[in-house]
Length: 484
Image 1 (cartoon, one colour):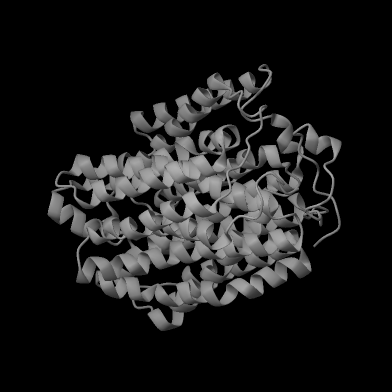
Image 2 (cartoon, rainbow, N blue to C red):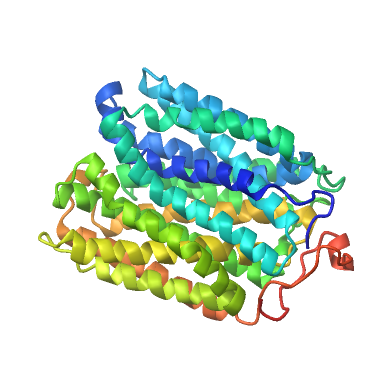
């Protein structure tokens, strides 16, 4: 149901912010070599350029989503964008490794505020049904285009300007978006219920997410059996269990567990986890395969991802229409099949494989499948959620995807046989195993789509429709209406 106190938000503005976040997540990967040469990073220290961002982004997403419900999504959006822009400037001017890592951590913290606010504003401003599907379609297409285009842009900027350009490119965009948001976004009136923020729950879940993200981040460098990894993951699981206990005993929980009775939301989050894994593992290993096996330079590697980004652009409108016609469950199943086909094709790579015959078509299929995931999963994960809990649903969705990125990448590295961060000597069998792993994740998406989302679909509802008693109480309804 739309949140009538917010009004229709400017979709282009919100999606531009999401594009910047998605671009920044991927753009640094190709620039890591330049950062290492210029700032003197060690091999083990270099991973924290990516890891610090992921750690703070994943660790604070749930808190960021709930904070938007509590203090107002416009306030959080503007504040988060401002911090993100300043952090980008700090990173672009860094002369020491620790400064760049600190800037990336600050970017992650800011992104954890902005990303749930974007999704919540879109979901609250567009009623369930065709209007929300179209709005979420634009959101998903922009997200996947930013991720795919980030690798390409990173190669070009690093090759022809400097690695610093991948950070400083956010400055003019961020400043413009902050100015536009301050003028164009309508101040939303937050719920008095939501302002009673569950502080113990917030501390527990944020600490749990940080511990899990930390363990997953260092696993690829130190190995799964390292004491640091075992302790971090154990502490993370223990804190998460403690958080669940607290949520059943406080009067105004940070995450009302009843929200998971919504099968569409629960299944959508499961698919977000799996698709985040497919996206991160495939991008990581395609990049390494192009550079290590085929001997591509940074700029040539970036250009090799352009067809994938172009497919994302072309496929966005057809995927939106397909979701409107078939509904989210069937569309996600189709997307999972496409991802599986792309992964199986990439699993056939050899030391002498052709980019045009194997990598290009496999990457294009993955790009098409990821487009389906980014557009349609957001619809499923926010279906049947009342306006006062839209920030929570958005935070859950982003957290699921972020955990999928971290956990599945760490698992993919382990499957490929990479020990202690030795990514410069991956055997060809390691690449094949990694792509078979993404195929297994993709098959899981098909299974969840068919079984978990069976019988669910977004409600078709006008903005003027009266709130149900469940909506008024802030209790998520089951998404069980006919398919869109």
